[in-house]
Amino acid sequence: MVNCTEKLEFTYCGDLVGISSIYSNAPDAAYDLLSQFYNTAYRALENYQKRDLDCKVYMFSDSLIVTGGNADAFVRSMCDLYMSNLNHSTLLRGGIVSGRLDFDLRVSRENFEKKLPRSDKLAKASALEKSVKGARFVIEPELAAQLLARTPRWRTLQGYLGDLMENFNFELERSIAPLPTGGGFEVLYPVFLNVPFDNGVGPSRVSDELIARNLARMEYLAAASSSEVIAHYQATKQVLEHSQLRRKHMPVRNRDDT
Image (cartoon, rainbow, N blue to C red; front, side, top):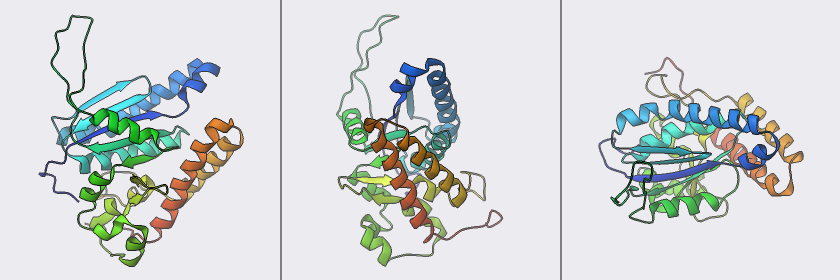
């Protein structure tokens, strides 16, 4: 894990996939899904915000933007959010890049607030998110290299298979894998949630049965969806299937372990 005192600034941009089509058919159901997303995000990021007092969180419609100074702690918090949304058959897709998002100070009025980004961080995070399908949590290569600093060989699938270390402290590193299409990395969030931390007070343990249920959900949703949406469910299935394989290589710690 990156030292919590070390600055690793980041900007994350994500949104829910397919919410506009739900609004067109059932506005009340779309509102309920968004409400669940807002509540889950609020709870999932609460502990992270206590550790990074300078972080900023913005939510608007189906979008979530976060910028802060502790990427390692943020990724850990987001794993719970991704899995919680997936358990509600809601797909969160997002990208994270290095560097903090900040805005120019502009003259404003009471009902006219200006948010002009000073850099390209938000644009890069948004482009990274839109480059993939499904409930994926994508990391740019530079930031992934910093998060994998203790296990540099794991930046390739071949290196991961050739260098499996039985170390409980590497649960986050084990959850980071190259994207199948290249161009970045992704967090296999069910892998990270397999191991509780802080003596069991942390993310919920994810069982193989829970992953199997989500795979079945994705299969059904793909079969009953339009051709434009099918790819998102199929991509999410790939994340879950890859997670299943990685979990077989991961040491499991009992909740009463210290």
